[in-house]
Length: 321
Image 1 (cartoon, rainbow, N blue to C red):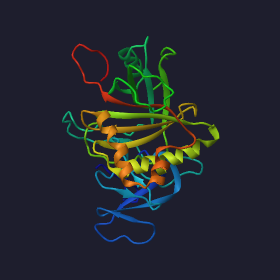
Image 2 (tube, rainbow, N blue to C red):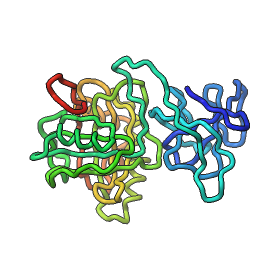
Image 3 (cartoon, rainbow, N blue to C red):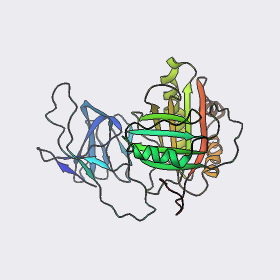
């Protein structure tokens, strides 16, 4: 863990994810009572009564931290900011100093350290080629990964978008990408200002479940978002599906359709098999009424819901992997 010292000689970490700033202080193992503190491995956190970046969070390694509002803070990215939250001018964002990158040994199979503020998502279909689209996204300054379909056919789940040849995901804050043909689907995404759910094991993500949804009426988008976070994703996270790791909600940068993205990260060699374990495990935990509320929302429109496998690098295939 990296830390900085502010002018008041207090340790301060800030990172991207939570809509409220959080100050961390070492408690040297002393109990923390009152004031909305929650103890976490000898450290305490308390909400700061000022608004900071909508993507600010703490890195606590494997520990589970909750804010004074009772919200879990989950983060997986590499950028930490050191400096002071004091001296904020009225109407300005607080400055947390320069970014500091964590040093770690690269074992080749370790989890990618990241907490990107934006995603550039492309579902590639012919005449576009996956490699060419990946190269175009990378050329625009995005960190690119490429994903292949984990299945060859669809189940009976109603979907708006047709199957694609592959998914290109650009992470970070890159620039404009030359557009593909109309056959492909491009979705510019920003992180929705709520924590990820699930678990973080330190393993490299090898599979994803990509879900794109919208509300039937645009004025019901917030209602659908709340159902997604507080009902649907919540019960999946609580079911502790083997192979599932973090589940992160994203929102269309233009507020268009698809409106929301749920990105489920998985480990293992069979993303589709991992996904198929999910519904039975959730059903076993819930009564019939709660399960029906979990399974469907009256405003739900599913544009995409399919599993993908990280493309393995090959010597003769150019482009990102």
